[in-house]
Image 1 (tube, helix red, strand yellow):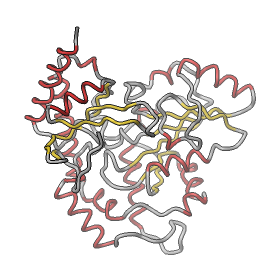
Image 2 (image 1 turned 30 degrees about the horizontal axis):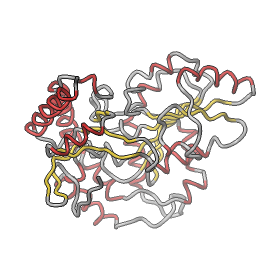
Image 3 (image 1 turned 60 degrees about the vertical axis):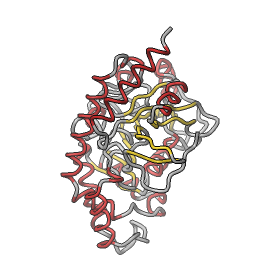
Length: 351
């Protein structure tokens, strides 16, 4: 059932005269309703304006963009970072670099459409990767592996075991880290530091800043040479930059990020500890999202006053995506009542 609201979505929502505690979305750190963080965004807008209407290639430039790229690269443990207006654009700019016949693009299951120039591109199961890589190399092509670090089915982060079972040394690896940066591991650095320890021909990590970091924009992490090549592209030069108000808040709200991240991980531990059947859910180590495939559980939770994520994604014809998302905004009583309800519903569903 689709529900509409007319205010910012936070811990509690009211729709059609019914109140719910909201356990969905991607507002992991609760920043979209955080009073001090919103003030910082507004302060940034007052300083820099609502929008910077110029190309990053312009002869007049805002220094905050370069400053933010350096700060994000440091957070992720990457050599360089490229800022763009969205995580989706970050993925598309990178994907365009590998359009030519010199590359063989291979997509792992559940790869986000941001990394696909063709949304209908065929995905390759992990157990067939070695075979496809070998075929590409025999044809003198460079294999390019695309995947999401957080696939919501428990694969990849934090171990990326499948990459350890194949010879990835001749592969370019491109990873969408949108649901990891700012959220996992405990320091919110995302996946880059883990991935750079694995053998690759080249590593590129893209991410939205709107999930873990709570601001509009996207980022690409890679080596300095590749970063400059991406900045020289027409896609980068022709696109609008991200909102400066959010970037200002990113720099001046680091204490907020730290406190909210600590709250989030405390809530995640409380939730997992309270579950009697944690194996029922798909999750990643220390991550806030808990996926499941049961419309009846979603309905039972809704009837009990909890609204979680449950809709076909990314299109109406795709499978139903259901997940419980813990955030830094949730209170102890919310999580305790939620786990108690889940435990009861799962017991009733067990024959």
